[in-house]
Image 1: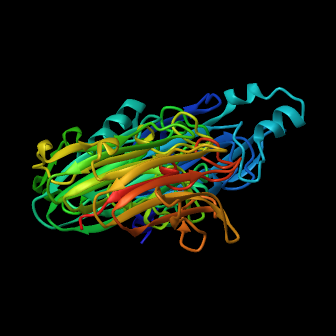
Image 2: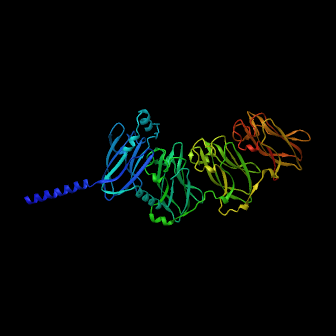
Image 3: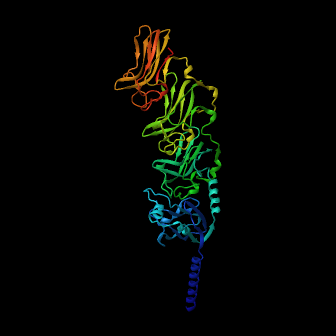
Length: 570
């Protein structure tokens, strides 16, 4: 009995000694220290078994999750999810400047990354700044505290250095079917990819967005139809750590077999190259990444170079448009064609201020226009709008138009610019890859033989006239734009019989329609029957609001302010 008891005591002693040795065998497997302002440091470690790790850190006092001057966290290196952050830890004051943080967390076997970020000058959403609080309000020098910042992780595992972490991150990116890293400012990248079979894919996108706009983000389109199949939207994105504007989306989508193009864009600030506020939990994956649910499916994905605006297909374009511009250009299609319209402009609250449209050169009827309800956000400020559509135009002649107001245009942005700044304007392309440039010719409106008489671009205080003759009775199309209000016309056109001086047609308020812009802009666009004979076409303006000197918003077709007569087919 005594021998059995002694044996039990001995075994118990060995067990306690083993447990104690295991506990004391824990060593420091990660350490970050001496973090300068506006700096992010990281390292990593590997755990070969599930265990509790001990975490110690020194930093500034936290106010809330969203106002951390110093922040630290641990990330699962494989699924990129945070498993611990500084706000989870208990803390106490070390002195008047610093707090000490202590915590333990149980982590499964795996690979982990440790981060520490120091952004004392960052302002929270309520305008509160640690820099103001410490350096100004208290009048003390706090630069020396940065030398005390640190985080230490102790456990039974293998320590990794920064380069080890970077190498593993790069390996993960190589496993992606599509990888677009947003690693610098003013980035606009795309990647074409073809799925040889239907697939479920995981889209992982980290970017910058808030209520007044989306600034760093991505989207995916069907390369053949240009239909968007996925898009990063602020309302669908989740908080990504650090600054509130850091957002991310991770979701699985089903895509049929076919060709696609992925895009990722960044604005002029806040990227891995230089964060202007605390970074997200996963700064290395700022960008857009597409993974297959089944790793073997990557063999069924083919990458190809995707040209978003093929130069060989361009029919007409106005790009890099500045303030107060009105541009127009004619073109003739020798056959019915599918046309892609790519246009960026400025719009807000249902109205467009910089926009484009297409008119029939013979009737001046609009065959397409950029309407706010048909646009989507073009990146940057929410008033940057994009329309990307495919329409069918019949054989014939057309006029392409683009107009801007007095602010927010290429290189004169008064708010965050769109992602595709150089394309501010309108571009027409043949939608068919087998486009033959010979099927399109230039249309010169001035040389159009269907024009009978024309008085346009009329200024203030003018009374202009032009004589014309008709050899036979005819229906004549009259296209006139003038000024009228309250039932009266101030800038208007009329036609007189040259022999009798009798007015045979007159532009009145009641026979005109709204011409766009200010409500006083009026338009007549219809046919008038005239007998064979000699006539005089007139246009008269008052002392204000005319071509080149508008006192309120111009009409949507300012270059034709005046009157034009056209022959009709019959």
